[in-house]
Length: 293
Length: 323
Image (tube, rainbow over all chains, first blue to last red):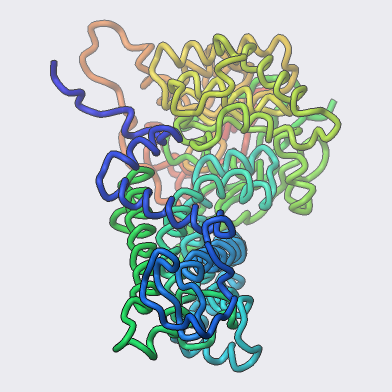
């Protein structure tokens, strides 16, 4: 039997089940999915998984080596590092999901307006995007932290502000490309207004790439959160973050290297996991995007 | 009774940095209520520009240079964009040429057909869906109740055009513009779609403006014909009168080129000699002068006016004015 000249099934938008099947078809996809699942389970069930209160201080037990009582040992205040790492997963994912969703909502809305609206508005919005993107993230973060003080909200605000322009640009370009599509003209000929065209007809056409981009941004955001917390600009103590675990261990790197490992390893693994998953997702949903994203 | 659609001296320009293309010039014709009017012309004659102009959906690069489009007595060009939007789909609807690209690829047919009924806020989703299914069945989609949840790519071209027709008819418009609805389809499907349109006439009482480049289609389907050449109306007549007694040399030339009229043993395909005129040039005489076999001196210097050939039959040619 000869192979078909043109694989019709491959040209059609994939169904949900076939996306999942293609996702786990590659080793990296499987690895990414399992790593992400572990982290998500850790974050969701943190209260049951963590054996100790991550904030409870017990000076006599400080800087203990890993044992069955304390899997990752204890830090300089005698807090259980394993519990802090487990709870840190929750903070990391909270920041990632909250800020990426907000960035997509804000950037996406602006992108739709810029792409479909009048040209002057497009110029204004693109100028705003470019202005924000021209700030180095860390400088921007320092300025914001100085202005409103370090907190979880500040971290989210920083990430939203730095990521919204990226989503906005993607949405804007896609909207512009779609604005003159025949089916948009057909909808307009039936009396649909701008809001209806954007929400009902253009948005469903661009959520695919947006979703892929978002999944690939998760590790970046996790790193930013950990980085800010490491520098002391992120979440306030005693809230556990992988960044603050790293910072706590950093002072004792010579004597108790497991503290650094406990903070760094989940960071590395989650970054890898989300990156693999994002790339596998991209290939599963739309391999043509490989060049763009 | 006044005509449903009356196009009065409509001109559309495409202004450019160096040259302005005058795509439509002083277009005049009317579509009576409940009639089918065919708009014929070769490629580039401005047929699609005209149908988009009626809906005020021309690209922003086009400019309406003058004239009026009166629909049911009101000039569409004077309406606010909100008022115009309110007319679209409800009173005037259009079926486009290429059914492969006029449906949103990521939404099911049902989602799109339900969404199109957004004006009917009183009806439930279920009612709207039922209406869509009924109309799909009416336009000949077999198993419409199940097919409504399919996506555009799951339909063939002919079926998609049926869906597009159903979408356009959902609002029960008074005027349906069919912009070369069969050009992208093969001959068998073309006959089917035309049969469908004819059949729909039994319960759709509105007027139809059928844009086409095929005289055969127009002859078979329409009550009246408007012949467009290079952005100008050269002749308007009833189908019978136009085919029996074409008044304009261009119409005659066009009729001679109709493959359906060729005899079996003629080996040469007749063509109209000469070049299509440059629409960016301002021209003094008749638009067809450069290709007209009966051209004489006056054709170069003076544009002919629309002259009555018979009641209801007008053409723009100096020969008719008894020059």
